[in-house]
Structures are given as structure tokens and as C-alpha cells.
Length: 201
Image 1 (cartoon, rainbow, N blue to C red):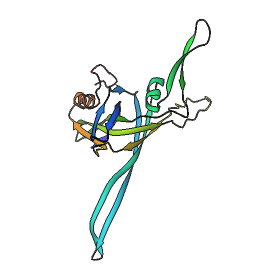
Image 2 (image 1 turned 90 degrees about the horizontal axis):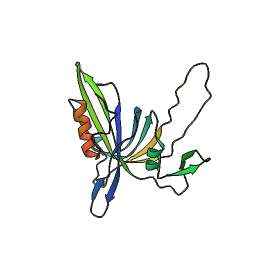
Image 3 (image 1 turned 45 degrees about the vertical axis):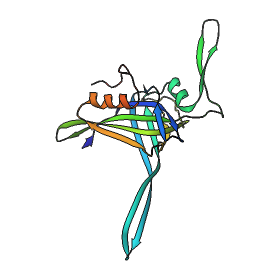
Image 4 (image 1 turned 180 degrees about the horizontal axis):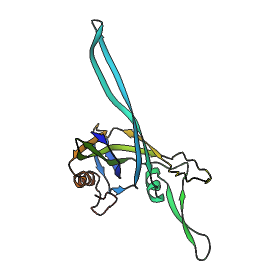
């Protein structure tokens, strides 16, 4: 199937109990509108040689890197992902602004992160819904440039480390017949309310 799009990036905070081997997701949200998601996986490859050939081979997930580019990531989402704080600051008698404060003591949490990839094969549209079960985001690198004669969109991305959840699962996915089914699965898995929006038909 040819992948023809990307939409509905969602997330939910992950809490794990290592001793019990259990996990729960908190209330999920839509992160933004999605421009791109890129994944790079680190896979251990251990062949066993016997009789001058490979008799057995073990390929095992170690970790991975996820690079998410949104149309715009709100300060509220960045604060939640990066463990930062938002404080209200008064500029003058009529103006108050919200200040996103990042410190050396910030502790980024863990999140389930999912999205939907529309696909087409033989003129039939399907919807692949993917969840990376445990992701920890990091402060993004950014660049900016002055506006010239032509408009150049500048959309900073944010990088996340993909890890195994306490139950050893690092990815879950389905292929649904409709966008509504794909959204419903993500909403159920990541505790997202039905009115979250940003996943229109």
C-alpha cells in the first residue's frame, strides 16, 4: 500500500509500575496538526554461525528515535513533554503574558505517542493507526532566518526517544477501513475524549 498522508498526532502520559509490571496512560490529547513523523530504529542483529553458514539469527529492538514536525507546538504541550513550567508575568497594568520557563532541573516524562497514516492500494483507502508505547521527548534544536522575497515556512521539529514499555511492547498498530475506526482505536488506547478534533473525515 502507498502511504498518502499523516494526521491526528496524539499523546498520553505514561505511568509504569516496574515492580508489578503494569502501566497506565493518563488523559490523552491531540498534540497539534502533523507535518511529518520520521522514525529511526536501533535493532540488535546477532547471527549464530554453524557449518559455515548462519544457523540462527536473532533480531531484537533496542530503542529508536522519533522526529515529529508539527504545524505549531503550543507552549502547553511543550511544557508537558519537556517537564517545563508556564508562569504568568505582568508586563504593565493591562498586559499579562504566559512565560514558558526551561531549567536545568526539568525532567521530561514518558508518553504514548500515536498518529494515523492514510494508505491506498488498488484504489481502496485504508488507515494505519500507530502507537509508540513509550516516548521521551527532548528540547528541540531550532533555527530561524529573515524573510526574503519568497516565503519560507519554518516549522521546528521535536525529537523523542522510543523505548520499550514495562511489558516489553514498544509499538502497536492497526489497519482500519475508515478514519473513524482508526481514531476510535487511538482514542481508546490513549484515553482521548471524543471531542478532541483535528482528525476530520
